[in-house]
Length: 249
Ligand code: COA
Image (tube, rainbow, N blue to C red; front, side):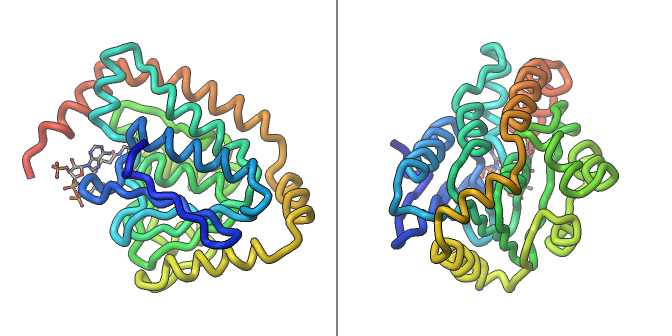
């Protein structure tokens, strides 16, 4: 088990906190394993009625770990634990709240498309620099983002890699509330507690109706995964990873 993901249960709310501050919560395979297990356990537990995902005050997550991208590019592009996490996220049964402080990059942004209520700090930034890395959108975002924010905004974010401020993310429908940075976790926790206090049967059915056909989302995740794997091994991607890992600050 990794200590880079901390899971705590606070009455009916499970909190999954990414905890790798020295790397801005860049996500590694062991972190995906821990997050997948935490989601699956929550789904199986009657006591847990809502799950909250959080990061640190300055970084929700800097996205997938680029050193791991380079390693997996060299070994055929497989990232099995990422794919398991994405499936668990897409098929997750419990309402999901996110507390986003600071940076949300790559999968740090796209995982929010699977959340039901997102609280962001006023200084949060949402960015998906896939193209610059020679990559393509993942986590079902090529399907979910255009549905959520329209093609124009999804293209600017996912393909051009132009970041969204917290306010723009709210206007785009990715974020529910923009709050003072010091209050993000408390306000997200309150939203999670409010959801947990509602009748769980009604919440579960309503959520299923609102989320639509999950098989389509999972199918898109699988298509993206296949194409992402090819892109990981491209010269464009390898050059971008090597440049990031070799940069001087
Ligand atoms: N993968 C691996 N390491 C990462 C990382 C990532 N996605 N994001 C940040 N880190 C590491 C940095 O290399 C640095 O490590 P070091 O201290 O050992 O040199 C540490 O985390 C802190 O990051 P730093 O770049 O110094 O912080 P910053 O505030 O100046 O910039 C970011 C933060 C997120 C803007 C910048 O780190 C970045 O662009 N990261 C890559 C994001 C990305 O492209 N993710 C993949 C999307 S698909």
